[in-house]
Length: 273
Image (cartoon, rainbow, N blue to C red; front, side, top):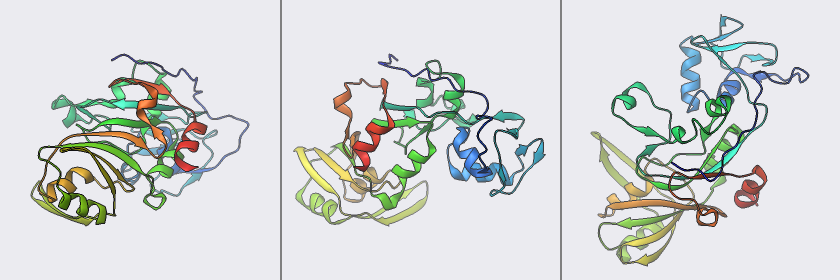
């Protein structure tokens, strides 16, 4: 895949020795880029997979100075980046937004992280995390960064960050479906033998064609849009994220699989102003 831009920011292997900064263990692990979720961080600690100066630590709230202590995960030493990088990716179809586990490797799954593997420094690559997730076949705007604080700010449900998608459906979108989406959908679907039920918040929807609409939501439940349409008796053929708040993908002229660098200031202006 061709990339319009890559970042070669140099990361040191240690935090600045002149900065005396104490972090809780779970904060350090979330920041270092080894884990894809907070639950994975907690589980690694509880399982005894984390050592600090070669001593197993099972206390999530353990505080220490990363500049003076060595942290390892199953014997692999972990480091904090000295500065954060930000990428805007046009996510291609057929990619998952997590690092591949053994089962996914056996299934020949592809991860969006492979796009960056040979394009950035190894320490940057290891620290990258996605700002939220798009499911495997969903395409479009995806922020990828080493900045855990940004991830929390954007994905915090209380912030109600708006995401806009182009939705292409199997059948024409009816007035009844539009009204339901604008008022909130009582989602009820059975997946993998389990019943999933939840109420969505009112959303903004505008038709672009009989079976195509722009849909804006301010929440991000798992496979929410696909489940909304399934509940309403329609099927999503293609889902593409075109914008997050004022950050609009088409303004960057990126093809699928391409990305560019973006500044935290640009993100702040687009998402939080």
